[in-house]
Image (cartoon, rainbow, N blue to C red; front, side):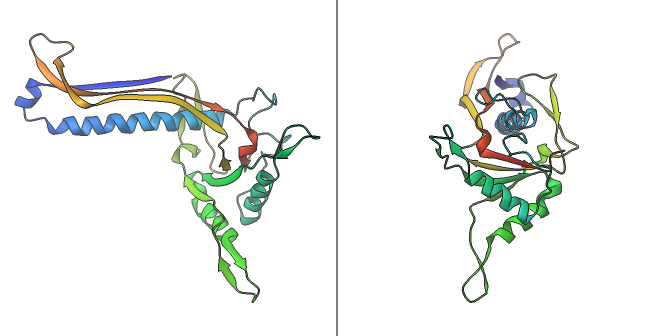
Length: 228
């Protein structure tokens, strides 16, 4: 899909002392482009479409990466173990997939539970019986787009909408489960040109163009909890 936006400020805007709006609008163009990428990823995640390799959804009970368990320290430990046990190839020729858990992605309603689960995983007991903190390599990411009250519109199809859940959480790994294919093209320096819909008026502006798509790649790099 393509995200493309332009803004233009002409000589009349300069006369009206409205030049400051140029930078505000230019900054908003970048924000909108970044949000489009986020919308692509969230829509792909919530759509949970089938993979060509397995013929099953990205997250499903057969592959073991979709469970109804609530987010706790124990369920996070189970998710990390599941990801660490994934292999590649056939049963006879399987090798470790080396997918490493990197992020616990949650809606705002599960931020406290996610923080507590990660902190609990980081407390280890040493030989003296004392608790010591160790980094487990999993960061907490809170995504408002995953909340139950947020309606996600797929940028590839304005008619398709997805709604998240306040109970679902995701452990994602590296390499990631969703690939982002895209090329960002933007002209950041002001361009002086004729105003697009006027005659004998000149001005300056900015534009941003983004060609991108998100596709589900590997079920072994994602684990969903709290599924209904």
